[in-house]
Image (cartoon, rainbow, N blue to C red; front, side, top):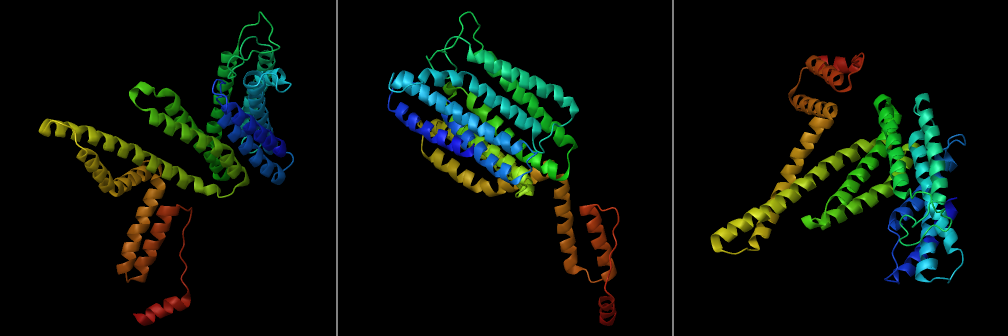
Length: 395
């Protein structure tokens, strides 16, 4: 399955390059997403399936998702080339278009089940069985309906469904909305798992939740900002971040399942919150400073000046370090309060350790630090007898 996914992706890239050479031919809009998913999910799935228990379906779901997106992309590029770029050059163009009309629904349906079964290959509880059966029914119904829906196939421009039945309603948009709704509902199962999870399972869910939140935020930034506002560059930033998050999604799930560097997710989330907030703040200060200084120059000398850009750049450079420390402190106090308090306690103890000479007082302080930072059920401090005798001799 992994080798087939890579082979289909390579052929898809070949036809994509050929289609790019025809300016009048529309380009399949989801080519990059399909490549990332086909290569990412199939590769991670091959690693997971080879190392996990045969009873765990997660690895095979990964491989199936990668293969399905490989089939989707190849079908789209092949249909565009044989039906629009070079009509009649190769056979089977209409068959490829027909496969795309329903195969993408199965690919999204597999993602729904992957989210439901992540990370241990089982449903969150028996109460989710009805949703699993409903998702299976709706995915199968949507695929059959899409296979015979008349009119232009979604994302293929003017290519019509060769097996479309006249008289049936066109349900492309409805099916797309329905599948996105199923993904959203299945994603809520992860938050329910996260609420009652602890230890390893909690860290596993954090990895996938992190990439999902980043991808969703970047998608909102990409598709909600309008170009007349002069924020076209911001849309491109959101698009790039979204693609990085999409390729990071199977990787993060693979890390969670294989438990490789599992506990580094807290550091990653912390750094994302800090540097994301820092970037937004510095950009706002930079452009706000330019606008204000340009108005000041216009009021003083009657024209704009490049000194406004230079001054704003110097201000941003001067504010970077102190602003980063303040944001780091705010994030630690707000979201990592326990670790923040523990760090402050250890810092205070290290200061006291430099000046304390009384062993008994130092022992009490050490027990108090352990109790405050680690919060154990019981604390006791044992001292070696020779250490105690040496301390008495020193006195």
